Every structure is written in structure tokens, then in C-alpha cells.
Amino acid sequence: MPEQAKKRPTLLLMFDLNWSVHDAPRPFTGPSAPQDWADIDPKAYLDWHLEMGNNAIFLQAYTYGGYAFYPTRLGPVPPGAGRELLPRLYQLAREAGLPFWSYFCVGADVAMCAYRHDWVIPGSQKNWWHGFLAPESPWADLFCERVEEFLKQFPVDWILFDWFCYGDLDSGFQVQPAWFVEQPFREMFNREMPEDASQITPEESLHYKREILARLFKRIQRTVEETSPATKIAFNPPYWKPADPLWVDHPMVRESDGLLAEYSRPETLQWLESVRRPEQQIIATPINVEGVVEEEVMLEWAEKGYVLNGYIWGTPPKMEPHPSLRPKGEAIRRAFHRIARQYG
View (tube, rainbow, N blue to C red):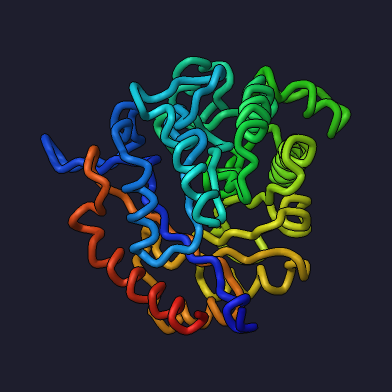
């Protein structure tokens, strides 16, 4: 194989089954329901990704909405063949020699947020209607049990752990008093948790969030290493700005296999380049809520060896981009095919 071909970057524009886009009876984009994508044919799903120019395959293990695309004893599954989508797709990808990426959402599970209100961080519903699940609550036990169950069956190449955050995608969320905060707060500050959030200083709030997320990261990392040592892990905290105090010298940033910048602004990527270890992979997103980056920028990312990982949404049950997103999808397809030609 030519040396140049070995360096071809990972190209992965996913058809994102986390979401469904609807035009009627009113425009609405929200978490998909278990029945929405239940009838997707795994071969058609694979072919769509290959036609887009991908050289890896992606499918959620558990969606952000809280259901799984494989048989699980720890949560809901789609009806009919939908519960076998991941097992069948995983087999097809392995037969084709394609890397397989999967996904768990750490910060939210829409179903579990509804089932267990006492696991939801107080005040976090102001940021997203369902709220954010507390890493200090039993949610962490269930989450890691799901990861272990999944990897025992499907030792995938990569797992993207999305929404790795505390209380909001913005890192400025103020820690709120709650039953699950009492013990760790006492351990960290040698005083009782205040009854009012105003009595928690900004410095204490930042320290608390960093420590709680470090504990959760270590637990997830250990679960993956003990269950599927070859599986690499990447986390998607929202790097809204470079050198965010929440993440500077954080264990997640130091020890993850991949550093994903969903909003791949130049200054953010420059910061990640400055802090990454040589073996860490930078993951940049060519398509996001802000639009599509220029094709030449994608080529520059490819030359740097970045993973190019984006997402696109559709309206169930059709596995095709929503009309409003087709131009973006076509721009990514052209760039991916150009990169593929360049790297062989």
C-alpha cells in the first residue's frame, strides 16, 4: 500500500439518529422517539455513509432520547427490527473492514430525566427543557453499566461520549444545592452544603464541577479499559472558548484518546493543538449549527491528520437529509470525495 494512502484521515459525516426534523404541523426539531428510525435497513444505512465518502461508520448505542439500537436490559429499544440495527450494522462494517464508532450521551437521557426527577440537577431545566442528569446521582451507576453491557457485545473502535458537562452546555452553570451534592461538597470544602446557591462562591462552584467531572471521567475511562481495552474514547464537552477554566489541565483533556471540538473555531483548534499529547487525536466538525466550513479548510484539517466528524439530520422514516440541510450535506460529500482522491 502506498505510504500516502496509510495517512488518509478518518472521514465521518454521520446521519444522526439522535434527532428528527418535522415541518408539520409546525416546524420542530427534537429528540427522536424509538419508533422514528426503527425501520432503517442496515445495508442502506451503510451505503449512505459510503456514498458520502466516509471511511468509518457511526451509530448511537443509546440515543440522547434514551433508547438503544441493540438489545439491552437497561433501557427502552425501538420496536421490531430497530433493536437489531446496531448488531447488523456492526457486522456489515466488520465484514467491510471499516472502523466502527458509537455513542452515549453523558449529560442527558430524555427518558431518564422524566423517570427520575430526583437525578436532575436543579435549575438545569432552564437551559434545556428536560434538564441535565447529575453525575453524583445513581445515573452514573446506570450509565457505566450501560457502557459495560454494550462493549461486552460490541467492542467498537471508538465511543463518543457526548454532553460531558455539568448542568448546561455552557461551562458557567452555578452549582445548586441538592441531596446528591451534600457529601461531595463536604468532602471538598470541609463544610456543609449551603441551603442557597448564592452562598457557594464562584471559585467553589468551578472547583466542584471540575472535581465531579474528573471523577466521572475516571469512572467511564476505567469501565471502558476493563471491558474493551482497544476501544478509544472521546468526549464532547462544549469548548465554547479556548482555555476554558473548566477544562484547563483537566484529566478528561489530558487522558482522552480524542479531543473533539464541536464548534471547530480556529482559536479552539489552536488551543487543542497546544495541549494535546502526541498520541491524542483532534476531531474537528466540518458541519454544525453554524454551517459548513470551507472545503479548503477541510483539506487543511485532513493534512494535519484531524478526524473530520460531522452530523446531519433528517425526517423519519426517510433516511435522507432534511431539504434545508441537503446543500450542507452535498458540500461535505464533495470535500470528502476530494480528500479520498488525494489520499488514495
